[in-house]
Length: 141
Image (cartoon, rainbow, N blue to C red; front, side, top):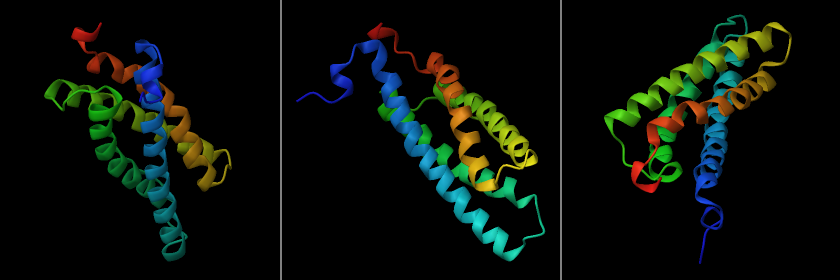
């Protein structure tokens, strides 16, 4: 029995798997962000920097999960120094974009809850194109 991606042309398979892993990662990151944001707002409502701390904690946990899913599922590769470097480069770029968008959206008076998910989703699209060259399997092309 073929999986959903097994029915697709080879060139689209990793993109579909990337969307699945990205959706799962977004859920993990946003869930942690939202939980910490709620805790921080109850404990220290006057400390605005905690929005970025909650967002960063969610990002870091999601990043570790995402690295292994990206290797084993999205691109069907094994972890290596090359793809770890590419992944880290892509994630640093993604983090800077996400955090910039988050702070810009909050500054524009979007609620912190919505700003977090919007920032994650907008930055996620860029991540695929940054990571792909580091995971290409020369044997399959």
